[in-house]
Amino acid sequence: MVGIKELIDQLKPIFSNAMNSMDLPESIWLPLLGKATVEDHGDVALPCHSLAGILKKAPQEIAKQISELVASDLQSFAIVSSMSGFVNITAKPEWLSNRISILLADPRLGISVDQKKTFVVDYSAPNVAKEMHVGHLRSTVIGDTIVRMLEFKGHTVIRENHVGDWGTPFGMLIEHLLDLGEDRAANELGVGDLDSFYKQARSKFVSDEEFANRSRSRVVLLQGGDAETLRLWRILVDESMRYFNEVYSMLGVMLTDDDIRGESCYQELLPEVLDRLRESGDLEESDGADVVFPGGWVNRDGEPLPMIIRKADGGYNYSTSDLACIIDRVERLGCDGFLYVVGTPQKQHFEMVFQVAKKAGFMSHNHQAVHVNFGSVLDTDGKVLKSREGEVIKLHDLLEESIRRAEQSIDDKNPDLLGKEREEVARAVGIGAVKYADLSTERTKDYVFDWEKMLSFEGNTAPYLQYAYARISSIFRKWGGDRESLATSFESLMESELSNLRSEEILLSRRLVEFPSILDDSVSTFSPHKLCKHLHSIASSFASFYENCGILKEDDEAISQRRLALCEVTSRELKLGLEMMGINVPERM
Image (cartoon, rainbow, N blue to C red):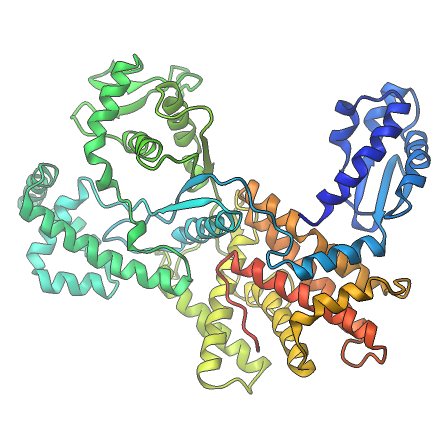
């Protein structure tokens, strides 16, 4: 790995010697050594405030003492200073250039491959015969990005689209399908009129007793495995999935029909869940229902809160289905971890499910079970995003609107783009803008859906990053040289004088070198926004570099080559970072 972590690794033995001379054990000082929080102060910092009570000295005095002890051993690759009780370490240009050289020569840009694990990622999860709306956007794009990052780190990832394709509503949906006729019903679902289909069925169920009775009888047939009912149910599922796949294709996510693992897949396991909980001694009876009391949870009256496994009427609950999922994923798939990319309101549900699953032995404490939670999408008024009519916004319509708006922005910025290229760029910018606006927000927080902001060519947006990439592509088109040769030529430049590096080159180099550790941190915390933030810092430092440092017009060939090498690494990191989010990067904009 190339980056700040490697710099810290180089610092550890040097600091260890200094701290030993001060009688400070590693357990006290090592956790303090980390990335500097103020970029202008250095790359790595050691705050000394917590050491004041131990050493009976002021933090400023401790920082000064440590700086003096390590200075001579650091001089070959870093500069040390003390300020306001902090020891600050700044990598020298030689160290940065060496790391840039390594990045240039490495197809993976310094990103290591982890010890392989198998992860199941549960995300997107639309409901059959219901429209995919903006609420599904977050689960889909966050889940897709996590899948891509885990795979790039060398893990085996099983994508599972936990589609809502079972339950009592399917009685009324199948009966409505029969009322319409199979061909007409298939057509309505196939063109994406899912909400209308569901609402019509629901309206009849509420107002027509005969229809409601038929629907209830159909549920019994469905749950009993009646062949004709299952055939009709399959029509609903297939036509809905065909439409969902249109949305997935527009979004550029990796989900396919092979990834569908609907609720129907776990029906046979539900009695097994009940039996196993009974055998483990966890199952109890409460008001006619079979329940488990996880412990630590209480209702509003302060009484123990149960998790219902089987309702008094004999029906199973969502919790039962999720426990069946865990059994399946552990025993059939042999996974090491499972991630549920589901909204924050389900936090308590998953905590209880995980607790019961561990207690009952469905999974071990070695399994990594994570609720990758996320907040809501808000309108500019701070309320949940809806259409002007007060309805939830269909995801397909939202994406079409973003492409249309992007096309207008591109017309304004580069009217020379025409035909198919113009359409492809508009799609890349429009879809990329929507996805990036979501991913660049810390996922646990709500975010405001703002067309003007997300499609802007300024700020932390996809168009800004895409434009930076296109600008670099333009530089290389004008140069016309062999980009692969830059790694070799840059290595030879390492031996030349580096004292003439401009501050913009140093800042860009520092941010490029940090890319691998930022990606690792984004993966380990399942936090795409960290990668987004760093990509923006790279693009913004490149903008300053581009404005202040001659590249192709530089008279000194060595300096020109050095700066082209920085352009190459910048281009590759921007492209890889955006590819981790499933965002395309046009060569021209």
